[in-house]
Image (cartoon, rainbow, N blue to C red):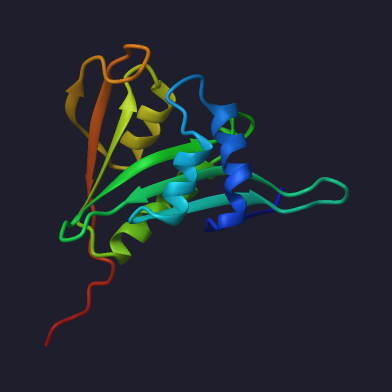
Length: 163
């Protein structure tokens, strides 16, 4: 399977919405919320897309959205979604590395996120990628599940020698 990683475009809206609806049981973004993230928010959304092969059309396999605040050096991983069929394939790690690079390119020093306390797979990925638990969030999700706030200190995008 050949994949492409790229920034999301407006025409990805329907595919993003289908992916979101198929990957999560609750706390899903609506089409309108996704439109806002793509068009109005101070955000960057990146997608992993499977290239068309033979008669099989291309399709989105994952996406991640970063939020930025003016004057802040902290970025927030607001949404991260990998299609259930490709979880464990390394695509999530690749997407997360790209999102971290995008945050560093905007001079972010920290990357924060929230994750369901019962999502062991995501917690494992984030910990392997260097995130640490920062704060317990009781009753955080719509179904009453608790969450964890996690954070990672980011290295500078480019360390130029001084002299």
